[in-house]
Length: 65
Image (cartoon, rainbow, N blue to C red; front, side):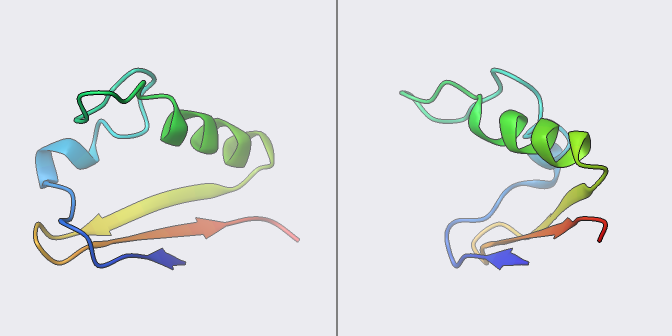
């Protein structure tokens, strides 16, 4: 698990954050989380996010042994 205490991710955005080129930042490319998602998927794992706006986010990564 990777957790932060930032501004959080809105529920409507959580479905989109792993899509290539999706970004909420003015200077972002939207490739970071999509690359992470693809690498984890290629390894047979999963990644998920739980977040509440203003309360940060928690990403859970599960990889097979």
